[in-house]
Length: 230
Image 1 (cartoon, rainbow, N blue to C red):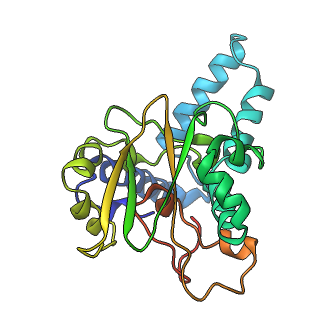
Image 2: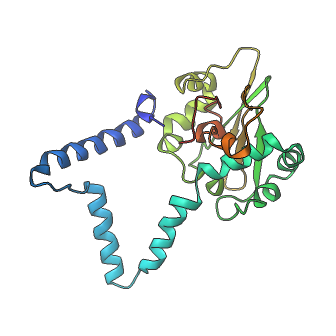
Image 3: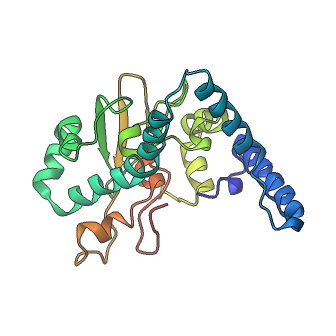
């Protein structure tokens, strides 16, 4: 998601500006046909090398951790859960009644994914998730939380002015639709089951999952035929 267009997410904008500066510097230094890593990449590599040299970190463990977050954890997991619920009424009932058990059917369990609750968006109710204290987030189904989710402006304004925040994400909720804001904690984490868009009746689970964005499962986005999973 392009967080720089969220005016209230100053931390995300700052991060994007820093990344752009690093890229520009690398481009200028390319006269020898070399691409210089960003400052952040160099720092991470240096820290990793130091920890490995001192025997504090196992390189194989690092590789396994990186592989987990690159290929096994992320919004694609939650998207599969959503697509299954859209196409299997029995699974949807299990998901809404006991989210932990239903999500575990996919093997998505573990730290930061305990005690899940799934909230179903309907034509009359729209759910939105925030963590007002820190950044509690369902890692096994959505991966790591985005920068804007952890920012102070989002954490405060989502509660004070949820409709205004949604509009800044490009989502307009009609006045006759109730907006409910749910505060994640260390004990309970939430996943929004977005409304299935019209025109998808003939699509299989894989195709449906490709439409489901991370934002839609937090409640700051909606699923449309034109939208692909980030």
